[in-house]
Image 1 (cartoon, rainbow, N blue to C red):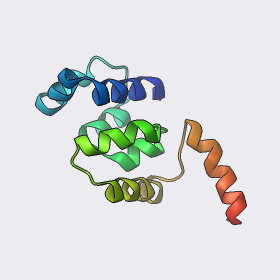
Image 2 (tube, one colour; image 1 turned 45 degrees about the vertical axis):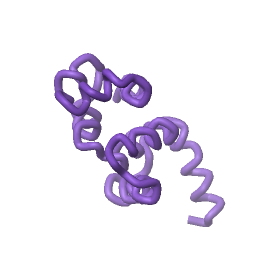
Image 3 (spheres, rainbow, N blue to C red; image 1 turned 90 degrees about the vertical axis):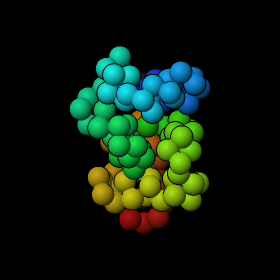
Image 4 (cartoon, one colour; image 1 turned 90 degrees about the horizontal axis):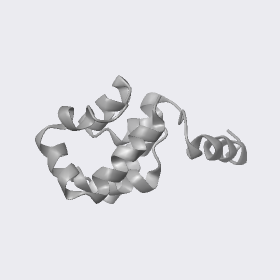
Length: 108
């Protein structure tokens, strides 16, 4: 998995109008410039917030990606919950640590 490349892409997408234009016009060509796994590339192309979250993307990056997709705040939060329900626990990144702690605190 290439969590760094995935997050670097989202950082660029969130900040650079030219990257946003290219994302709208030709996602495949844009993403060819990033070292992403097929799973990561597919989630970005589909705008699958839940899958990106499970793959370890930082929520600060995802919360700016969601409006680019036309997603409302409540839908963004639900997409992350749905991602965990559909794909399982967060696999990488900072949320792996907090998920385990939250489950212990909640008595799960």
